[in-house]
Length: 314
Image (cartoon, rainbow, N blue to C red):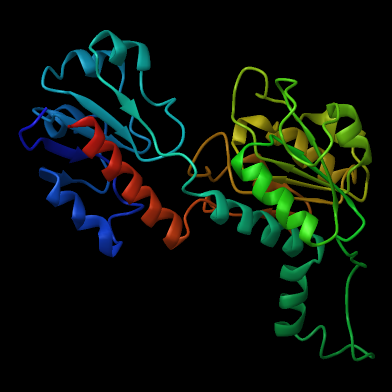
């Protein structure tokens, strides 16, 4: 491959406002769209040698209808939205970007934990709403909070992000253990334990594994019942790992103290989603799949996609 390719970014909304975004124009004939509907797909993708997708599906049927396609770049870590078998049959490489969001996800993991465990949203509202002003004492809280130092911090999935979260938790003095759904020991200074032990002994359980057959619905009501009533669940990985209705039930029944969730089985979150029915919203901190999206992470993502195009077009 030598001539400048026609490059089409199908759903660039999450990165197209960054200063480095226009650098794609140095790689070829570049066109981007903030969003692409299924009806718009073929018209926009036609004639492209390089397709960049974040969430848009590149199915076998679509690959078959794109005779000029030579490279698929996924502007994300996962490639589950691309039919890789169909791409291989056409000798079309599928390249993703890994590791770009590690620090961003780890940062929100700890932030979300502290926000829900220290009841910060409620306390902020108590100050603005006057409840604190009407208090008899100089200090005010709804329920006590505890230091992370000395607590057992369980991580499901000891990949790059899991390791970074482990480092941060350790810096606060927590005792880190981890569970591997594949039963693999990792070269880390933390003991691997079985899921039952992780659930029953940890004050914090933070999920950082991929969604697979072995992790889908991994945390349902029976698993939540095994957790301590003082424990917190954090999910910054994939929505399908936690059974969403079961988490609401567990929170409403007091099986666990709270949870922070950034990912969902359906995104964006529908208006009738079960999470929105939780009785005490201060127990369930919801963020809109934003953990990955620091400016630095999105900049690294752009650079990674550009590197993949350079390497794939040599």
